[in-house]
Length: 311
Image (cartoon, rainbow, N blue to C red; front, side):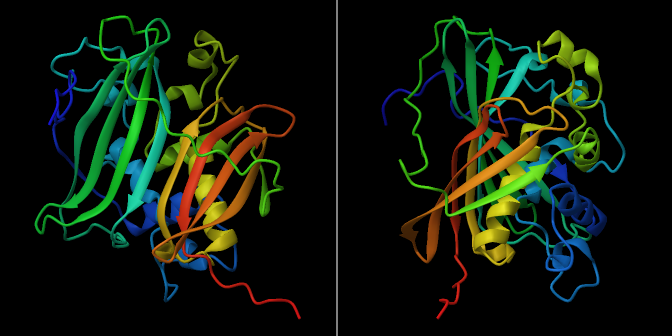
């Protein structure tokens, strides 16, 4: 078995989550689903109405609430046994990976869903800070069936040097060298992009009012990293998977730089030809036009819809 590092296996309290059809409609609209080809994400009476597959990424913020919540109170998580208590006001998203095991129903009504979370690793990166890697699974509490599995890491800025393990070298998924992207998608954000996206349940003041961003050195509000992450998952599913939710099996990316409201985002996607049981690996990056790459390590497994050859 080998020795487990500090905090590994620590379980956070389980919490119930809930969503309505309206939540799915808002989410799809907020990440760029388009009319008329994606009415199955945007209109509840469409015969193929379905949840956009990455929707569960929002549930750990939302819980069962339909009203706004105090973000700081909610994110002040249970301290992890065996490691120092970290200040959750200074945590940045590191990387997120979501695996889709079963499509979620269009409403949780009449069922009880919960999120079960545990620590996979706590890594001391010295002066820069500490990385906490967690696993969150979305489970039907009655049947025990798992719908999605998320592996995420949070980076606690400047909170390292407590003598913990350095952690494994991170695995990278760069785009193929010297190869133009298979497809490119341009998304123009606005000054209001984050104000719409936050209504999904992610009410961090950093994305709504200038003060926190000024304190953190961003010069004002920034757009949720998960907005760019979800926007890219939508671009990929629409581009390669005919917008069919069951065509996305896995999706991940690393948060590399902030996005300012009004930035133009460029998503570059590469088909790799690598297959895993009928799903092809797509690599991608998201960058700000004329600026930094904001999502790196982008990787998705997609059932690529056959494109008819041009004769």
